[in-house]
Image (cartoon, rainbow, N blue to C red; front, side, top):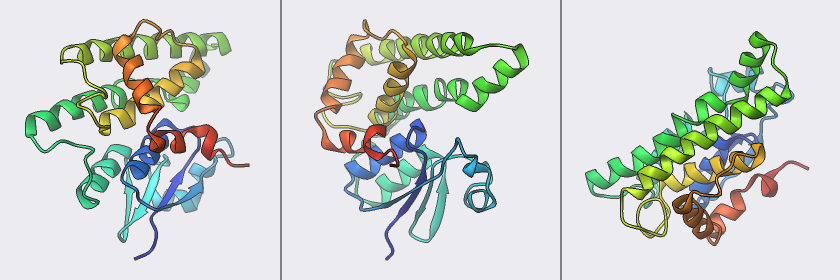
Length: 212
């Protein structure tokens, strides 16, 4: 069986979360960069992989998968993973936390969305920074409240990384990139520290996979 191929952009948080999942499950894969700045995601070759023109795309098991959370769930189901718990209530809990990032923070902070808003409003770089800080900061604070509803654990749910952690850590990278203040989010800070000790997270970091 051929090695899986991940078509990604080094700074894409959706790509970053899939890299973490692949590493956690010890999947040997090839990474093919798709340069968003050079508009390679709009090329005919990439649109054939993903008609939405988004990254990542994952070629695996004769399939071409799109949507990062679908990729992570597929990997978990086919690679005997532990990224989602067995119990239905616990699986729902992990999905709630993952969706809070992937569906509530990521879409409104996608750079293409923000760029269009700024184009319509005549905004400048300062407005972009303010937008990112507002939505990342407020919605990570809401995630902190969700995490605080449960007893303290090492990771988002339980004592090993799950799909929720795969989503959280890339969003924290974006928070730091844009200067969002997350210093008082104690649950998130604790989880980030624990994830930082897991090699799979470090190996997926944008600085480790940046081309060149």
